[in-house]
Length: 106
Image (cartoon, rainbow, N blue to C red; front, side, top):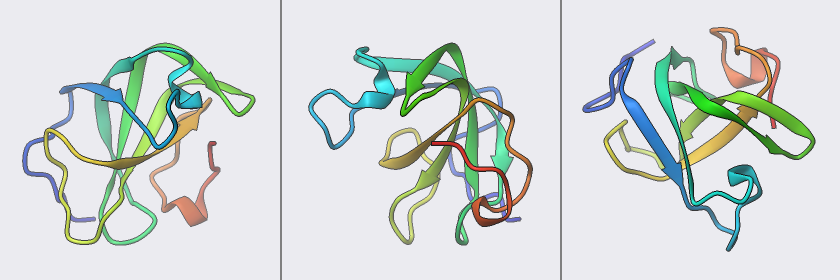
């Protein structure tokens, strides 16, 4: 697994916000959520996915958890200090396997 990061490193603090909806469900009514990068796992495709442990659990789509798996959204992008990502909420610690080969969150 290649470490395709430029700026994001294990232990870094992360703030997540925004989304396609006016009030994204995954933010549970907050403007943003904060957490720390705990590591990287294989992504769905070539880029690695980032695993974030939130400071406080959130609830979305019937799941309450404090772990997010972030996947890069666009080909040719790298992990940097800002960007657009896909957010997967987990109520478990994901295995170090591709999304297709592991238990999946919401």
